[in-house]
Image 1 (cartoon, rainbow, N blue to C red):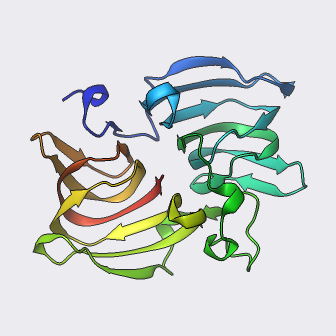
Image 2: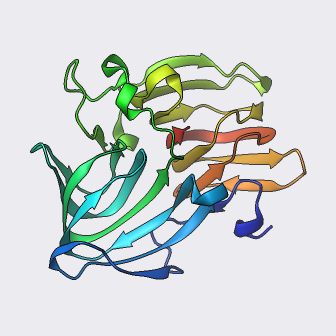
Amino acid sequence: MPEGTSSAPHLANASTRTDVVSWGAQPEALAGNSQSSGRVLYKGPGGQPESGLWICTPGRWRLAIPRDELCYFVAGRADYLHDNGERVAIAPHTLVLFPAGWTGECTVHETLRNTYMLTAATSDAAGADPALADTGHGALPMAAPSLLEPLAQTNLVDWGLIPTMLEGASHASGKLLYKGSQGRSESGIWRCTPGRWACHVTRDEYCHFLAGRSTYVHESGEVIEIAPDTVAYFPQGWRGVCTVHETVTKVYMIH
């Protein structure tokens, strides 16, 4: 089934795809002439939520994040400078959650490439519980919590056996980057060992798979093969069966 008509839209080889569309000059330029391009993976009613692939050439510009946005940067270097003085340095394999209302400047030093999820208008950022924002910086979360090299993380928390096992015994573990108020929004790292289990997606979920192999079979019979560097979007209500062949690690956002 073509990617665009899939029950869970997905792109293989996200880090090296070249079939992108020009999105023009980055608005509110301060220096240089950053040009954006990309590919939309999923867009909900009224354009919200949105997920896809984004590329931006060097330059410096103002920006304001309208809704919570998770970005997994696979290439390039940049600095995001919040208006409060906080700086987030971007290198390859950086995961960042920009909360709704984030304002500041971005300086792209080397062409950036990321996959992303921009949530719907209801934001959890303003009411987030600081204790649940796992930033590594103590009790007070950063304005934009970030994590470098998620695939190399070893201090994951055991999240137990997948509760809907059909065959084998898949165990999940992970690390939270951010959790919004009342748990409506969550992002981080997820790892799962081999096994086969029933899957029911209760909220929209963006996934960028970093390692491992798995097969998702939708209740319609559609087969979705997942390999390293596949980005996928599972809309709320998706049902099927997941078979993990080799331990999977992914970064994710649910909302």
